[in-house]
Amino acid sequence: MAQQIKPQISKKNKAVPTKLPVWLMNSERHQVQLTKGRLVQDNLTRFATLVAFLTRITPVYKAKNSPWVRIIELIGLTILIVLSSQVMFLWLILILLLTHLIILPGSVIITITKKLVKLMAVSLLVLLPSLLLQANNISLLLTRVALIMLNISIFLSITSWPQFIQGLEQLHLPSVIILTLDITMKYVYTLGVYIQELLSSIKLRTFGQHVNRRVLGVIIGQVYLSAKKRMGDLYQAMLLRGYNNSSIARRKLSWNKYDLISMGELLFAVAAYFVTQGVVA
Image 1 (cartoon, rainbow, N blue to C red):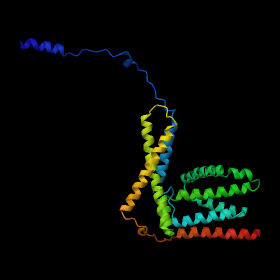
Image 2: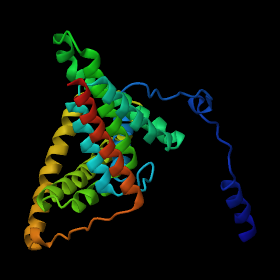
Image 3: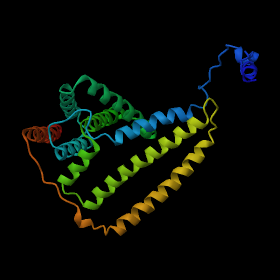
Image 4: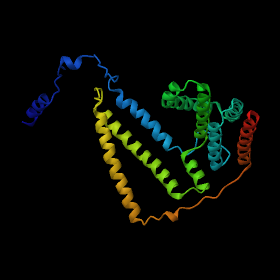
């Protein structure tokens, strides 16, 4: 009996080839169109760039002078450019700034050029009413704006945010201002990461679909609620830890030979300003 049952079981368990449906045998491949709804993809790239900028500890080019000297030189040259109306002095400042560019690597010069173009575009947009209403000295105004933007672009390329905060501490600015700036930038970074994660989740949920621009209102609402909650948590944490403004440490001024060169450049610019003003007078 056992010998008779075994072949019967083997016959029942024998694999029977099945025929696949026609729609599974079709080799046609459909590509998902991602050209629609570029709102999420474009903003993901922008927020990734913003987060990378805020988390950058080392600048694009590591300058050898101290941060506080860079801040003083930036403010000093900007004030002199704004006050001066002499073409000769502006030419001297341009030569001085171009000298700073010469010692930088080529990749840093390209980065500064890109920043300069963006800053000039924003400046022209803001100053457009003044340019249309002012009939004379338009070239002088544009020259001043270009020199100021070039000075700011060089400063941003050689100074990171932590170095900027360190320079403010070395200049002994009020600790409340320094702390406010530091917390603000760190909080902007936190919000940037949150928005990046929110956009990534929307991108994954709407893969291959058109993203309605009304989603922007939802994103703004979520960011507002998150910002409100995080600021409340930060305030409560500072209260529980017994925050005291006097506990912030002060940084001492540091000098090196490159700081002397920077201060010499600033003194040269001041002397050139008074000389050009005296020649014209």
